[in-house]
Length: 89
Image 1 (cartoon, rainbow, N blue to C red):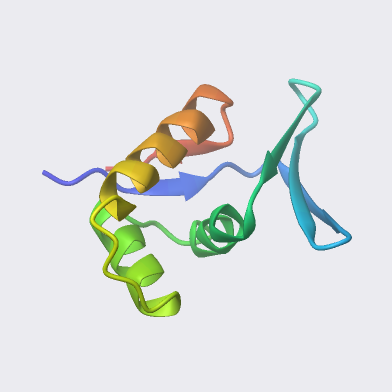
Image 2 (spheres, rainbow, N blue to C red):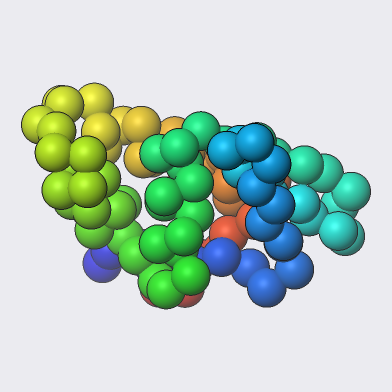
């Protein structure tokens, strides 16, 4: 079964000078993400799998980069570790 991931309700997003930062008020942390991470973060308002995020990145950035899946997996692992997202299925 494919895991789905969604943003937790506590984090807030701040964009300053085109840099996206995710604030976790309960953990007192700030996580800075690049433009691809920012796009993924917006998508995670709704449940997504690694596969659906990878497909969205490929389409949005018009790329066939073979590293997209691994990059998305690493990104989701980092967000899980920071307690910014959760698995919902």
